[in-house]
Length: 422
Ligand code: AMP
Ligand code: MG
Image 1 (cartoon, rainbow, N blue to C red):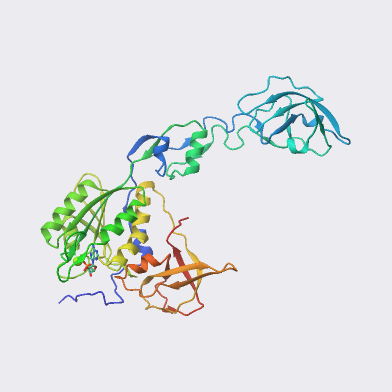
Image 2: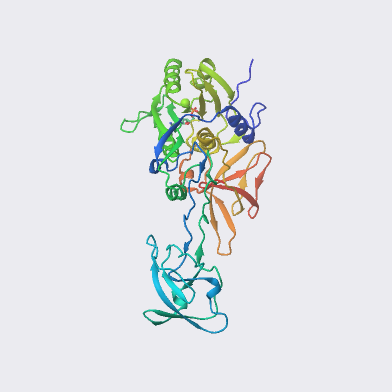
């Protein structure tokens, strides 16, 4: 008879490592190719679908970096103070019409075009104003100072932003400085998700004995909304093969990725795995990690396009851990074709941490930086996979590797802050 596995097992030959699971996900998923043309503001946070070359120099002309006086470097005083006549003013956007000559200067404002013949700006704070038309300069200046060259920030025809990049606030500014008002970006991934479980009730319903409110759909909603995706909340699905089959079919027709929570263990009411087997393919279904072990990854073949399937465990902490470790990078890869690595840091543990070898653990921790710059971390307390408050209190995961057998106070551990990728 086939041995029934349970969540109490610590070693399992068919559980793959966390790194292996990530590798298989990136191998299977193919990035989105569909694109749309949007106006600049609407491109914020979207993934660029074209390489952008600069059509112009930025700045487009040689200009002053300071308010002051424009002069030719070879007319600067060399050993004694010199007087100069002011013959005009160059404002930003309004160049001077005066003809520069030696012995003269032209008043210039920040961003003002450098008059022909000048190549140096003297800050107004370093100038002695003799009268309305005359200044005196000390012999302390260098040729070329306080001048911004044309194309100093971006040279014409150079590659400015590459395809696959997520457009930041700085990028919006750069594109505006190039006069680019429309861009091709990839379409947003569509992510459908639903909860499974006969014990689940929606907010507003009365709980009968043994029932709980569905919280996973809300944490998933929050985590998905932080990413730039189209979120399709498909509600609650009952633990029957028919309900599951229908939900799988309609979700896969609408979405690039379908996420479920619950029903992936080996209980009698766990219909996720048989339904995936019937309607698609399973790539793996168990990861050597805690929490999050019964994680299923596969694909569904219900439409001409690929739909990838992630069956997350039901326990609320396991949902968040598996989402952050696998789905977040998978969705970013789907959107952009880029693999982002979560930022990890070394920290000194101020707690003793218990652990069994054979699986990677994602304990919840609170890290801080002491006044002398050291990063320390303590665990949040109870680490059960149903203790959702541990995720709310924590600001990082403490990642304990597969071979670790625990950590003593004062040991160095690896942490993964909840924010930040590199
Ligand atoms: P399962 O994997 O379906 O056996 O679920 C494991 C545990 O997670 C059970 O205690 C479930 O009641 C709980 N659970 C499953 N889905 C949810 C949900 N959507 N919200 C809160 N708890 C859930
Ligand atoms: Mg269930």
